[in-house]
Image (cartoon, rainbow, N blue to C red; front, side, top):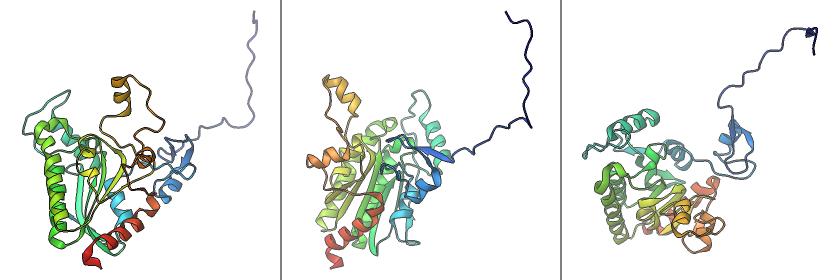
Length: 283
């Protein structure tokens, strides 16, 4: 039993809590290291400890891939409409507005043309932060137009995929984009122009089942998740344990589904070389 309370004496002023600015440090999803954010950004958003490739925005992808000041965007005002008046937990139109506010984009795709290491290219770049990079009518239309512009200008086409698949809120209107984009790529092939498909984390669903796997050269970033259904869904369906690294880029390369895995710092140089080799108009 305590009869007297002991006073707590401290020397000097009371210690003050140190406030660390939010966003100053990031945690690597792969190795778990806490890293200074500026250091990660200087390394093209790649973990300096384990080479894990963080997801990056479409704008950032364009900045590190295209020669400075050469990229010209097309169809930036094209935006989706809620033709089916779809509603799940929220109205589709409300989801669109929320994603537009968050990303500053009209939809999950940026298209345009520019120079990659001096080589002209028509490009389409997914923005995963916009409704998981899902492919709806606008995304499919912008990809198709990018391919058609490549044919008109005689340049190669490069598509950077980062998507959860078809946009369920657009139903059949979304699914038809798989056939539409694939048909446009068939015309590109008839024109003997190259198509380079770059798979980034993640590339899933209707995107992986259509144009993403139709490239003349298919490249993936290290450890990118690529597949149709996710590994957890597959494991629960077949009730079997999946192989180590299943659906990761390295696993797909070992099984002949990819042509190469390229680190982000070497991506621009690699694409430039491929365009110069594969485009007959560059010879």
